[in-house]
Image (tube, rainbow, N blue to C red; front, top):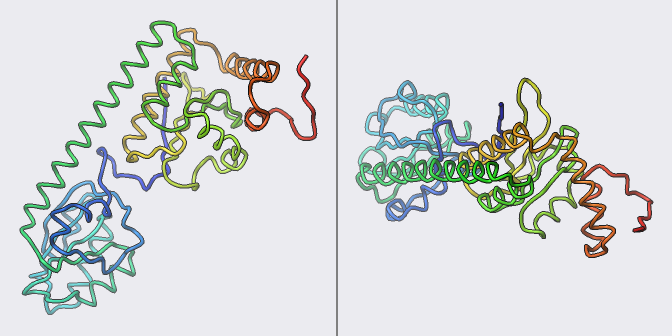
Length: 321
């Protein structure tokens, strides 16, 4: 059984849920330091995996990516070459941001560091009222640990709940409803041709997704905003479908965990007799025709569903018999 997931959030580095630079800057302890973004303002949604205090110019050799680096600049003052090298080192190490405490070494934001950080797109923040860096590292690290624990707990809750439903013989729709409940966003399952087989979630939100499905399918959700998470469905060397979380509002790493657990459950459901992809397509068509014949679902909802399912509805009139 194989599932792979992809997210179109600004992705967190591997290792679990992260805070963004923007979120760190809104922490009460940081706000008390009067932070000012002096470079890289367009990159504040970068994920912060860890916080690291470093003064050496070759700081990059100590990093593994995703760190917010805190410094007083005491070893950089008066040497513009070292200042530029420090920023370059952070950039090459994929640091999330650099925070400089203004004081004796730098009473004002150093132009060389600001200019270099802006050139590399590295968020640079100065603190006008510096405070002990240990206070910030402790708060951020504790928040990151709590987030990771919460994500793992959620992942296990989803896995346990879905496995229980499968064991009880629940239909596919019941599994999707449970996934939508945990994700808080529309959930869509498609075949490899991007035809919608089944959906779950708040009806109005699902309808919004289906109305725009042609564009979403064409671009695979890739650049259409935050929260699009996709997991491939397949096993035994064969891919046969996709699951999408459409507009997931949690952090990217948690979204990937949810999508992976959901995909594993759907693959298991199929392997244990929940039906082939073809039967899922038949169920989708049967449900659509049932709603059409009953006349209980407005046409404005049925037509987007039909188009998303790949049915030719252009210039056609459907008459229930």
